[in-house]
Image 1 (cartoon, rainbow, N blue to C red):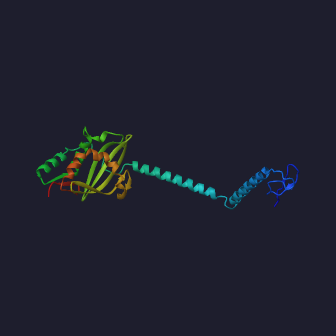
Image 2 (image 1 turned 45 degrees about the vertical axis):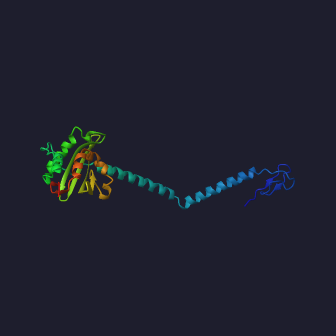
Image 3 (image 1 turned 180 degrees about the vertical axis):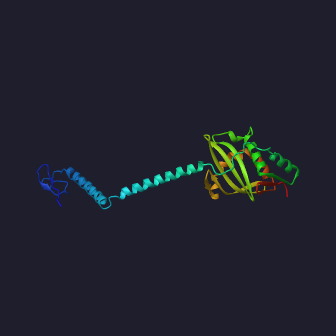
Length: 249
């Protein structure tokens, strides 16, 4: 290793690199050159270390960059695929060209609750869907308000469960969502337990459907009066293609 000497600017005496004043005449030494040399030496050492690292592991940084880029592309592709699947229409019955006469279900419930007669009300799936279509088309219905227009609400009844399906329009594009529920009435409250749902052709786990209730918000808004009346009932029973409303026990 070469040891740099500090030369005194007055007497030209060579001094050790750690000295501040000249050993011969006592003049203050100029250490700027030594500091610059040390800085360059340190930079050279750092460059050497980086160069050696690249020599022994030349593709480490490149591999990490490629892996990160791959995962970004993969996540983007999955997101696009999920959106496409959610926009695809599910296998549901098409909307009928015309509906049969819709019974006044809410008025029937209000009348039965006030007189307790008859003790039960039974409606077919077709009757309920005709009533729902009329409720969505009412002049005071909030279905046509906002950006995501509500076009259709319909139900499907099975033993012990009710399927609710909603069709909305987003920029003239139909988007379907739905869920199957077990419904109970107690203490003036309706308790609906989701059995799973869907958006388009994408199935949604029951644990996640409770966070997706916003998808049905406008439908519940349109049926606020009916929901209040149902909450006052003693019970509700679902059977294949029919529902029975129990007024009093």
